[in-house]
Length: 458
Image 1 (cartoon, helix red, strand yellow):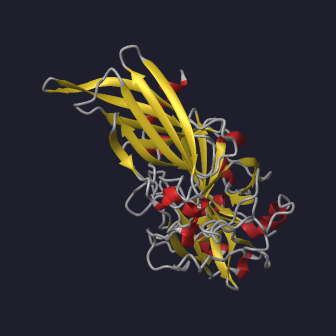
Image 2 (cartoon, helix red, strand yellow):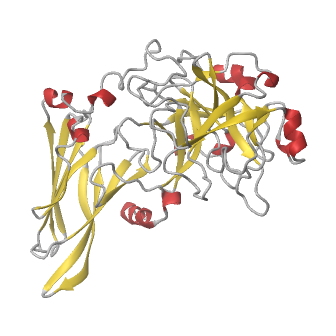
Image 3 (cartoon, helix red, strand yellow):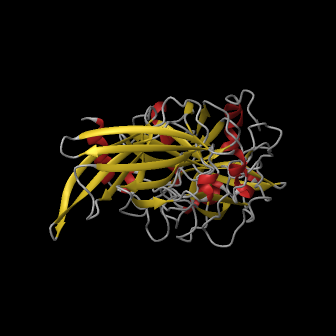
């Protein structure tokens, strides 16, 4: 199957399996789609010809604003991949155009600022703050002759004045404090940036505000050009993420290849990984604990993801602290911790667009085991149980790998990883009338630290 055919198929498969993503600006008319680590992100767009358009010669102009490009020899590509008749109005035929935009591989993603078809402006965000924050503008132009099926493509790079970028009205959110480097001395673990983030971690309600869980990470993997959300995770340093081991096994118990995994830091809306301030990183290694066994899901259900490059700490990307106190489970029984993720909600949505949090208490092993006989098989010395057993509050399907953090002396500190739960009878849906099982991170502190090298916070 060629690349064009594959891309067209991607466009029409369901949201959960393909994870199609809307762009933040000018959402009507195209979708961002992740293809693979070599091609990166592609925008698939569509438009309809107007009644005055001359079909033998279609002109398409697409501009996008971008961060400074390291390599200006490749500015992207623009081509029409499908052109077909849709209807006739009077004596005028109208056609649908599907086009493809390839971007230079970069982080963050570029922002499309305008789309013009035969002189008609379909989208114009040239004056938006998101455009002004990016110092370079790429102008792509395509002439398409429908009779001879010929396409002529040109590209141009325009560098904007520095003062124009600095005057961005969003600089309070994405200025020097948000774009701080990975210098370990500038960021304190387990702290929200209350200068730029005005909502504290402890909130009324369940949906969290952006920036209040800066250590919450989303883990994705792709297969045959299809990108899918897998799990939550916790950033604990400038190179390490902690999550659940079972997140890296498919339904056939096959381990996902490291090359097929990516992590998105600073993500808020699950539909928009390219939001301003996110970082898309690829693992150098995915390390499953050697004692983990997929069949019972309880034996050391923990994994450490090591990134190829250091994370850039920002207002929206900061590490949680790693538990340093005594690791006895008795010391946390009765304490209430916070967990968050994009998992199944109380109305049955398999994933939620925005992450939700819950405050839940830790219970003793004895209480957990007495509550249901099944816990004898899914708990161990390296797990603990928590929850309200009220049917609504707690982590569920899709929250696996996510954190359970506690406030320790003003620092949000990681103690648990969402591992497993009992299912409602006759379903594969979590049963929040029962406790949830967490991997006890404190039992694996030395193993986690062994991947730390010179990374921050270890």
